[in-house]
Amino acid sequence: MRRKWRVALPAIVLIAAAAVVAPVFLERPAPNDPPRQSRRNRDRPADDPVPVLAAVARRADVPVHIDGVGTVRPANTVTVKPQVDGQLLALTFKEGQDVRKGDVLARIDPTPYKAQLDQVMARKAQNEALLENARRDLERYQRLAETNAVTRQQADTQRSTVAQLEAQLRADQAAIDNARATLAYTTVIAPIDGRTGIRTVDEGNIVKASDPNGLVVISQIRPIAVVFSVPQQQLPRINRAWSQGALPVEALDADNRLAVDRGTLTVVDNNVDVQTGTVKLKAEFPNPDLALWPGAFINVRLLVETLRGVTVVPTGAVQRGPDGPFVYVVSEGRATMRKVGVGLQNDTDAVLTSGLDLGEMVVTTGFSRLAEGARVAVTDAAQPTAPPAEPPRRGPRTEASTGAGATTTR
Image: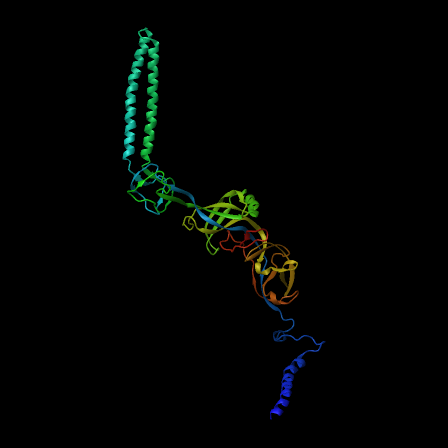
């Protein structure tokens, strides 16, 4: 039995291999046979139209933006410091309170400074009495000098004494003004409009004019500023647009869709950062709802130009090939490839500069089965709409084909 099994085993293996290989050779087409179609293609007629989505080329006004990320800064910031030394008697503000310029913020013990004012005022009164007496003596010397009862030298000496006392009175008045100013410094007032921060000292402490921390920091947040940077390549375009008028700037939310505030460009820095190749810009926002807060990062969008009456198609309609961008134009139920020129492009729209006329229909979805001259069945065609009445609020940050940092949104 063992010998019979050794003889039969090779035969069994050969039979099994033949059973596996035979269907492959039987199914292999002859060299001149046409290739077999897939089941889907066998089920579909050879000239069955390809279902696609399409849109109509329209005319629109397209805004050109430059996007950036900026830092929110107060329009003005002041560290309120005492100008005299003394005991802090009272703080008349609350932390986080909005204050107006001239509002009283704190009071410092005025006693020593009032005493200094009384001293200089008393000294002035004393010198005024001396001056009055010296003037009477001068009148007497002048009359006596006319009759030669006294020498003219005595009269001239008395005249000099009067002049000295008059100068002393002017010095006394200056000392009084200085003492009054010092006394006024014991009442600390707000130098600007703004919002107070967290105080750095409590009532009852001794404060000094040399203290670097001060009493409190006031930040002006209505209006507020945003400083952001753009590539230096955009500087000529910005300067050219700015020379024609104020440039609007939008502050966008975290999703880069909604404008939380709108302002204007106020400053273009006078130098380019040689390390980053960027230039700083500053914009001012009214910030009525306090949507912008000092120190926060914010997305900004600067409008530098509006392209009027340009041809626009959805971005998905523009394809890239070896010879450049092209679109599939639908005409009489067939798709035809056409080379186009693209100006600006973002995630939603593309501005075409050549190759397409208004009203022509282009394919936006279904390119995988398209070929030149293929029959198509348009299942949906977007009709042209009127251009927006105002700059849009949404639109992702994209790279424009005409320069880094420039975008176009619809």
